[in-house]
Structures are given as C-alpha cells and as structure tokens.
Image (cartoon, rainbow over all chains, first blue to last red; front, side, top):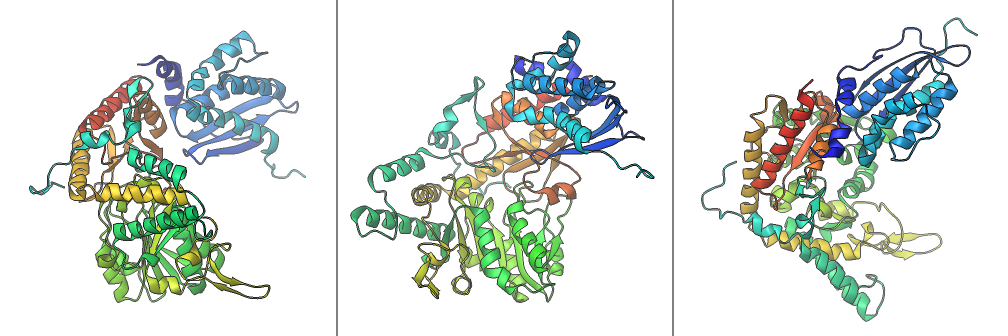
Length: 153
Length: 415
C-alpha cells in the first residue's frame, strides 16, 4: 500500500473509528452542538459539561460518517476531558495546523504525539474537513451551545 | 442487457485515444476514470474546436454587423441545429441554450409552471430525482403552496409506472422525472409515462442529463413536453446545456432572466419580448461552449450509438458479476435494462474512505449522496460509492475497480 494511505488508515485510527471512545450523549451536558458536513453527510454531536471555571469536566459525542471523522472525534474527546478552555483552544489550533501539513507550536510532547496520528490527512486535502468537523463542533458547543437548564433563571 | 448479434462491437480502446486526459497518470498509476456520471471527459475534437473558434471566428453573437460577429452567430445558431438534430426536435427554435441542466429545469419552473400554480396544485416527482429536479419544485411548494407528490421506486430501483399513474390527480400540473437515475442507473419508460400523463392532460418534463448520454433521444417520438440536457456530461464543455420545449409551451412562457438579447423593444414605460428562443437567452450566451457542445454531439452521433450502449451494458454486467462475489458489498439499483451506473454500499467502510483508497489506485469514483438525498433516505443509506461508465471505459477499468475494492476491504476488514 502506498505510504500516505498507510499513514492515513493506520491501525490506531481504524481502532478509534471502530471502537470510538467517550461515545454517547452526556446526561448532564451543559453545552451541546451538532456538526454536519453537507458534502459528505458526516455528522457529529458534541456534548460538554463545563465546570464553573470553564474546564471540560466531561465530554461525549455521537456521530455517523467516515472513519476519519469518527476517529478524529474519538481522539478529540479523549484528549479534551479535563482540559481548560484555553488548553483546548491551543490543542485545536495545533490540530488545525497539523492537518494542513504545517508545524504546530506550543504543544506538549504527549499532545503532539497523539495529534500526530491524524497528521497524515494533510496528504488528502479533500478529506481534511472530515478530520476537523469534530473540533469545530466542539468549539461551537463551548462557545454557543449552552443548554438552558430547567428551573434556572 | 445482451447486445443483439447484429450490433458491431464498439472499439472502446480506439475511442480512448480520442480523449487526451485518459493517457495521464495519477499518483503514478494509470487514470481509471469511472466518474463520467458526474462529468464526462472531452474528446480532442471538442477541445480543438473551441480553441480554433476562439482563435479565428470569435465575437459576440446577434449584435455586431461585422464579419466576426456574423461568423460567430452562424456557429452559435448552427450549434442549436445540432442540438435539434441530437434530440430530433421538430424545430430549431424549440431549443433554448442554458448554462446547464439545472438552469433548464429552473427555466421551466419559473417561466412555465409558476404562473400556472394555485395553492394545492400538485407536481409529481419520483424519489430518484437529482436535486436539480427537486429543488426548483420545492421553491413552488414553499412560495406558492404547490404540493409535491412523490412516487416511490421498487427495491430493485425500478419505477412502478402504476404508482406513478396513481399519483396523477385532477390537480396535477406537471410530472417531472428523470430519464435515467444518476444513482441507480434506472431508465424510465418515458414514452409510456408521457402517454399516460397526456391522457390525463398533464405535461411531462424529463431530466435527460444522464439519459441523453446513453441512449438516442427522440423528443417527437416521446411526445415529451420538456427535456433538459447538460453539455458536460455529453462529452462537451461545462457552462452550457439546453432545454427542449414544445413550441406551444415556449410561446406561452414568460421570460426568466431579463437583459440584452431577449427583448423586442424597451421603452421607459413598456417592454415587449423577443420570440423564443431569444426570449429565454438573456445576456451574452456561452458562445465558445456552444461550438464545443455541437462538436461533442456530432462526435456522439458519428458513433454507432447502439454499439456504444451495448458496450456500456457489457461493462456494467461485467462489473456487476464481479462485485456479486463480495458478500460485504451491497449494490443499490438492479432494475432491468438499467444504464451503466453501479452504486453500492460496503459493509464497515464509509463511501469516502473507500473512494480515497480507490483514488490512490488511480480509480476515480464518486462517493456521497449524489445530490439525491430523498433516494438515499429511501434506501436507508447516507451515502454510496458510484462507478459510472462511459464509452471510453474498458473491462480493464472494471478490473482496476475490483482490485481497488479488494484492497480497501483488506485495509478495513481486519481488526
């Protein structure tokens, strides 16, 4: 198989797509957003529980789509749990650079190693949107997806 | 689907030499182009004709009195006659140039149907329409209260003509359906449908964007009211298509776009419009493209079209047999007599992943909803992978597709 394909569909990505981590709606989500790519039909819904300091106390997702979109959502959900919003933004910026084939600054070695798994997508410009859908949906959830709580003013 | 014995075999290998792009490689592999249903490649004669025209005869049409304007006008009007011949229309002024099939259908929607719609009037469609033959009618639903009546297809993708008949009521204003589904390959029995609709006083529009590519169309024999085609699927250029409409309909149609060319007289407080076809061709038309389209249609008419059709059916049957061996692959659309389009869903493998892997093998296919979301919903899928065959494809192309599918399965099946 050619190297670019081998890197794109490496075992860890296929594994995430087959056995997505943190899959499912959160019962007590404070934020939620749906992402949809009309070109290919990929769908993802991201659920967040942000604590008082804006930290991602919990995260879950549901979705349907290609292996890349689902693996990316799974990897993201695993990474973002417990992170501050600023930290999550930094990860997202780094991720967006990596999938465009650029170098990402300011990431810890561990984070970079995890995100690097998805870097192979940069060889497939038509598919970059599949990989970024979950992250953009996360951001929409965090920024605009506040769920009105029953009984609250 | 078997070719009658008296049809000479079509020499696709020789035809390939007419299409310059087919000799290129992608990712170091020979190009295997199985996406002609989205857009067909162009023969050299088309590309050369457009360039020659632009270099020697080009000017705006219908305006100048100068030499080049006259020459360009001649070519543009000659192209109209070529389309007339291609569709066997009775008159050249029944051919309206548009920018494509989509605009042709929108023209009927805005200019012919919209002024005739009362709230509650019905438009009959099939679930296998392309969005270009759905959205213009949705506009009339949203804006004017028209009701869309959907005719289902059978599980094999064939159209149930009785169901279509039953969908026509006293309020039906138009039947709008595809001549050949861009996903299922299903070919609709237009002549019979037109006869039944006319018996109830209902006109019929056919979306011929796929159909006209694969079979000879005779709008007079079909007695059809409206027939839309697009140039780029007919081995011609993008940016041009055509609407055939019966003269009586055209004369009763109000203009769609307003601008130059389409008027008889404009004053400060009144306006009169040109006769068809000019009434519907506001602004500078796709002149160079018209020349390319005419050459593309001449190229097609110069081939033994029955032999081309038999060749395409052979490719489809060959591919269908091969994929039939894969128990992890489900074909969507097996209607008898269908055209050379093969859509399928692969177990555990999304269409986009599959298309990406095929692409790296040089095999270009389409993956997605194919602008036919109601049909995707009908078959309970969100996307399919589609291989569409053209006159220049060969069994070797099918073999490359099959090898690519096996490879993709190898990547996704383990674990």
